[in-house]
Image 1 (cartoon, rainbow, N blue to C red):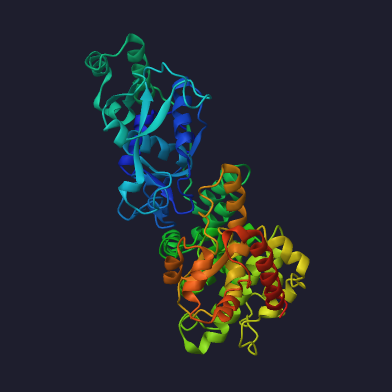
Image 2: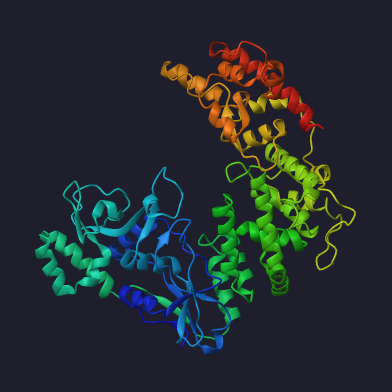
Length: 579
């Protein structure tokens, strides 16, 4: 029967998760809580604070086929184990779908039955235990030191197994005793007292452990409302209403929920797999928002994120086109990798969408990356994209800019109108896109002089400027940004001198683009020696190709070199950007 039900204990909820009596509907978002949020949740539980009511939907046989359902995470690892596993509910007993409370329930489950893997600072991003702290939640029984988090009364921390050796009771350097929260399942109340004796716990430590045991097993702390009507659409509407009024979900999360709720196949897995492939294999940093925006940009009159845009008819239409759209997304990002771009050098993911539109609606998916027939289009796309990184058309009015850009491909876009592309358009319309979006501008000397001295090696604009300047590399050649005067040249100078030099030496007038092997050979060789070694008896030609001024190239003449190379770059970039 619908309504508020009798509260249950944490243990009862955890057991229902383990037995797949609690499942997550496809339109529910994934787990997003930070470690600190879990620690504070347990502090709230210990202090007796209410943790808000939850909302469950009772799912019976007639509703089990309405959506896809997923299990709770069995462990969490950032970037690598974030997606819930699909659960086939066919022939499964009746269960509860979690409409509100998933973050809290997942946190409880991870803390008591699993682990939360935290990436080690400055380590490689790879799905390998060596690069993560595999952490279990521990409760500070002693608390003789001030907690790391000043907002808590009861200190819980995720501690790595390298530190704790996964001991049931771990003693830190301050002689504080920490209890591994998951081990509470090994002890009944009487055995907690036995553990206290075996672990040499003080009376206060024993009381804290006993209170923790009570909170898990005895206190009915989880309040929930149960919706029992077998109406899947109502369940989605309840979910949207709960989450559209406040902070819990981003608007795009709600749109994603609506989109996949109207998708007959496993859209959640499909879209997540696409995002993961682009990020992990091709080294970009996109999310599901870009995929949703792509749907709208390709086929909808209104490309703004609005709930009524993702109606059932539109999603059914997109689902029929999904394989082609997915393949085109992959090829677009393969093309960007061919250009040498990656997450760090692509400053706006929105810049991908005009390229996607041109390739998709022009049926070039299978040709654009490698076919010799598409060489001119590749050059135009690359030039437009590099210019977009420099000119930054996507600001606060990104949707308006994108809508105007789409006019470069078809002047009068109409949804459900078979025609999405001007058939006369054979080449990527670089200039027309800039004109329609009204960001094409005359680049002058003053603008460039101001900007290039601010562009540093790791800025996306550095790669864009240098790729426009050094455009004679063959396709598929991997390039790297390198310093002309080595960044380490001032290592023996005073701290103040070194700091000033390292700043200016890391800006565009001291940067160049080299092939991978050439970059390795350059390394920390002084500029004058490197030129002498590589000019092959034609110093003037070599200097010209690398935009290096024909002056004294020793480090003592760095200031003049910097000024003169700035002039050379500005002179060349004015020609390139205004052509």
